Length: 539
Image (cartoon, rainbow, N blue to C red):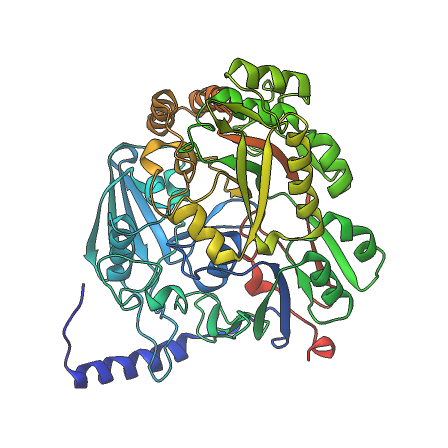
């Protein structure tokens, strides 16, 4: 909605909102000091900073600092009020009415006063998120919502197409301002908003440097009380070893994800806390099934048999992880422990390739009808760490032994994302996914998610998988959903659209001066407004 106010009315309302919000702004009053700067290191750079178009973890972490949902999740994994302070559920779980918190304001843009958060912003967010021209991994997660209706400025009602399991938790999606994007109908990655968004959260984006450092400052008017730490500065690194050295030389105060090879060095330094956290994630080699050679599942299965995953995990990550067999993260309720990873068996790999019609050519590369098993493996340059280099080079070496040629290309991050998600100009990729506790894999493997900037980058399509995913969304029985997911796990393990590798044990490292630390398992910064730095350690 775009109201056409007069200039005088805009000035009057902005001034009154400013006075009101400042009057309501309160400190946390918990006895902990405000102040200080926290510089944290990230392995890579965010492509976009808004919560709708983003599909990488670096952006998601920034979203936790900048935005809020209608509801949130606390440290005990309980649903708590955020932008809505209460709600009603009616019609057997088909209608959710949210009563919005009063006095919440949006981060002001330079030269502007803060604007009030209202029901219009909630309706706007839902509509723009679900617009056909908005490319977002969120759309498939919220197709269960039939409509969103504004009842008044502080009340919204959502009607569901059907009751679903754990519906309330899904309303944690981040709300964006109706006056934020330049295009009020749909959101694209070229909209200025995605690079410098404004939210209602504890921190505001102040600027992004030429080196893509993201500088965030405390929101004095945050409705939960001003966060304690004055500034968060996200510093990107293209090499994990350099990032670890930056920590050791006090250039940064925190590493979000420590390279397992750097753990012993950090662990031995009394200045730092090394904290494990259980991100629901895994790494994989993903295949572009538009390539007819990779469309044959026997070829993909052969690749899985050709590589020694345990040897790679032990050698390159100090064994800090678990080999996986399928599309769900270990540790999640959806993972099927009865499905075992395809074993390391080069002879089985060769047998599968021969069964698919390939024979060894004069140069040792398998071929069929003049087509060689020769592929390009693309890796984002931010992942050009020592460990990742070793993984992809080991993959190349293992496959060469069974007659497959792999050409490794390291690409700049944004260029890699365009190749993979926009142009689909690749044969194989090395990447990782991080999940929330819904274990929803629909955006990865449902055929409706094939297309530009969608997560089914490999073009995988299987009507049985599609129907199982739809069935899982329709059931209200948790055990039935678990049974469906077990079938999906078994089927996708056999289909091998990815070679599933491992989940790594995640560690964050931070300076002991950062106190009252609590880390959200997969969003990380959800509780950061309660962190603080003692006055004597502030700089």
